[in-house]
Length: 166
Picture 1: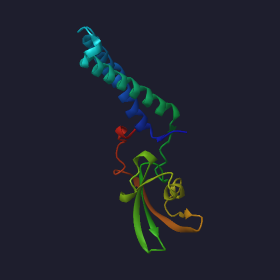
Picture 2 (picture 1 turned 90 degrees about the vertical axis):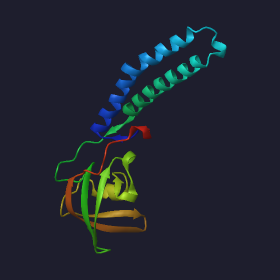
Picture 3 (picture 1 turned 90 degrees about the horizontal axis):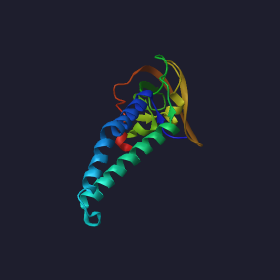
Picture 4 (picture 1 turned 180 degrees about the vertical axis):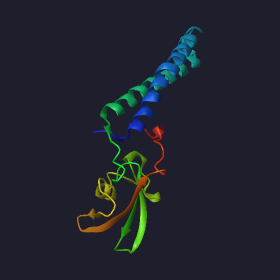
């Protein structure tokens, strides 16, 4: 099983593959041919540099295709349920405070900013629930706590997938 990706993430990766295949590959192939035409390849830095860049481009295309082939697509949740790219405000009775989490796919998580993965203990507990539900977060085998869902809304904090992380 590979990365969890949203449909927007898939579109972004497909766009990079297409750009690399249609725009960049012909330019890099031409650069290799031009450098090769300069003569002796044994001391031709331009030739080796062009081949290396062309190889990197082809490797990146193959890698991104593999990411898509092995990815699990995460569908958007109904508007009244907690899911990917939603902000959820919860009441934490144990601490007597309210907090807001943004749920995202694992590759975009940033726990220091309350942007949590759907695979984290909090994310797993919240996904699929609605306003008014009380969920149990199992932090480890010895400790769990309750959260009461107070508000759910589409996230503006989730941000776009930075595919340079791949």
